[in-house]
Amino acid sequence: MSTSTPPAPAATALPDLGNTRIAFAAKSDHELWKAYWLFRIIGTSWLTTLGSTCSRIALTLHLPVKGLIKATIFKQFCGGETVEECLHTATKLAQSGVGSILDHSVEGQDDEDELDATVTEVLRTVAVNKTRTDLPYCVFKPTGISRTELLRIVSSGRALTAAEQVEWQRVEQRMERLCRAAHDADARLLVDAEESWLQPAIDGLVQEMMERYNGKKAVVFNTVQLYRHDRLAFLRESHAQAVAKGYYLGMKLVRGAYMEKERERAEEQGYPSPIHANKADADRDYDAALQYCVDHLDRIAVCVGTHNEQSTLLMAQLMQARGLPHQDDRIWYGQLLGMSDHISFNMSSAGYNVCKYLPYGPVRKVLPYLIRRAEENTSVKGQTGREIRLIGTERKRRKGQA
Image 1 (cartoon, rainbow, N blue to C red):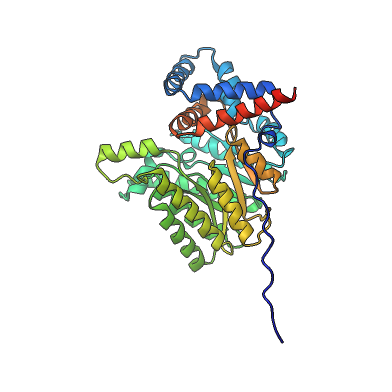
Image 2 (cartoon, rainbow, N blue to C red):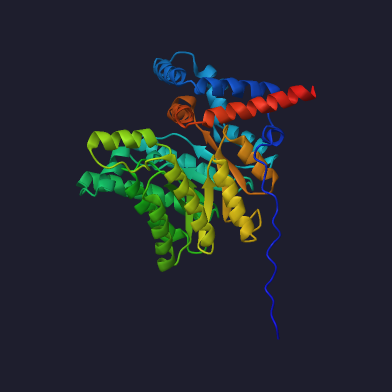
């Protein structure tokens, strides 16, 4: 009896990420105007530096600037000050088929009570996750549940003092509470990445939680920053460990958020920089990581966290080449609120799984996050200019229809 090879799935057109009508359909003319001028300001490095410094001073001195910050940069990049405010933003995104990740963006806290409060807040997002279908992940930053210096000490391999051992046990207990809650709620939990000198301690905790809770599917997700030259190898090693120990690997792939800080510290302390020498090498590793995850989807679930059009479309091509449905639940695309709407909404319109990070928290406590967003937009070549160009294109399109 003869057999025939089944036909390859028909190729379909990739999403048009330049469609500004779809990208900004949910924004009013006034909202577009505000976003345009905000990115113009962010794109000017000296204005960003001046604004960041003045904001810090003003809030420290309790000057009445909270309303101005909340109406401008906070509104662009944050979902609200509370979970309830964030859910209003999530509902609006869901109308366009875009999911949301409630991100309690209070970080770098060192007081034990504040660290415990972060756990309580993240547990609230896990509980909310059970009640809605538009929240594909929960998330937290490790510096929200551990003193930053303690993460550095554990990562360095130095023996802990008796007091530090007790403190580290509390960190482990916080991690355990969050991962167990996500598992019990049938939710997925992203653990964000930190600086390279903090990451080994985090990787160890996350691997332990994966072994414990990812036995049937990926519940706990680690984050790899692929502007680091060692992270592609780390991804492969993590997969090998998952296969050997019989659990599923959850991975969020990002390029990275601390490039200048990493390079400056390496130069100051006289060790080789962990960051790729150039953007092309980082792009190469990111795309290779996409390929690796798709090649091992039997064991890996992946969140494609990128603001890069080429990487986004590459993942879509890889899915298409394997005949994977656009809404394969093992693959999600993610961008930050207020950025790269041309990717988020056009990918969602084409039927792919897309979500937005919705940072939230009191304006004063979220300010470090907002300043980092502004500085990243200033430092990443072409990113702010791209936002300005796309918003400008849509404003002209609308004027042409008037």
